[in-house]
Image (cartoon, rainbow, N blue to C red):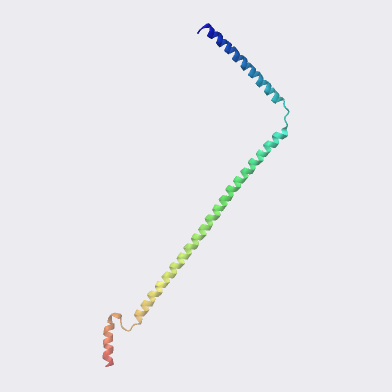
Amino acid sequence: MSLEDKLANEAMDSGLAEALINFRLSVHAWSDAEFGKPRTAAKIVRHGGWRLAAGWALGCVLVAGAAGGGVFEHHHQQEMAKAAAARAVQQQRLAAEQRAREEEDLLAKVDSDVSREVPSAMEPLAQLMAEDDAK
């Protein structure tokens, strides 16, 4: 590295150092000015109070919504169980009516079979004998 480069680097370093010192001083001056401004506690409390109240209100709404959803789901399940029980009772009643009709049909068939004088297989023979008696 040549002598001229070293001098140029030192000039740049000293310029950079001076710029950093000026920046530091301006930051400190700004910070002191902001720190020295009067603050009122009412603004801070009022601002934080609204946030706190809004947070609590939102939390209460969420809890109420979750509880309401649970109650609705429980009620819905109870209604579905009642409907299923009613359908089961209806099906049992229809099955009992069907069995009763089948039993009545069977008893009517047995009654008609028993009430004949001659079994149906012997019917042609009975007709021949009835003709012989008529002659």
